Amino acid sequence: MKLIILDRDGVINQDSDNFIKSVEEFIPLPGSLEAITKLNKAGYTVAVATNQSGIGRGYFDEATLSAMHEKLHRLLAETGGHIDYIVHCPHIADDHCDCRKPKPGLLLQIKQHFNTPLDNVPVVGDSLRDLQSAQEVGAKPHLVKTGKGLRTLKQGVGLDNIPVYDDLATFVDAFLE
Image (tube, rainbow, N blue to C red):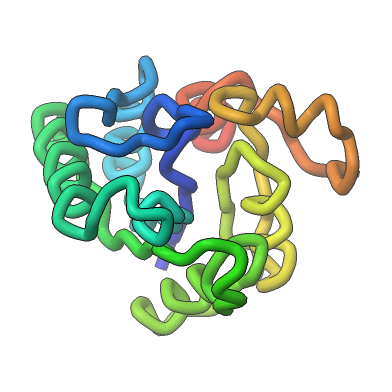
């Protein structure tokens, strides 16, 4: 199986320090839907692993998150693309769960769902925690500058040998070459 794992906020859609709390606030980044469609057409299974602590903070509920993902599926279908599996962590850091990135729990759920190893599977994220969770399971982290990506780059910690791309579309074009 050809698998690729994407973070959601800041990679697929716009991010906000105030959280994406509604369907209206869920706005795809330019080129991201087309990039996912390219991955699908190249035979890739696309999974999304996303921290959604806004649920744990009471900013929105599971039904709202589902509606955001329904919007994502609908918009992707319009471009001929799809996402095969989405996992999320609803917890806040104080919950000490094993699924909140940088912990590997979300990626391990994907591994179990598809019954496939994650060795060298590309994981595209915009934050250090995305990259750390990928490294934890032996996957191959990639950083995009969208979302919190530029902030992550400025921190510079833990980014040795991690490729950096302007956005998801740029990553996909380089990856599929």
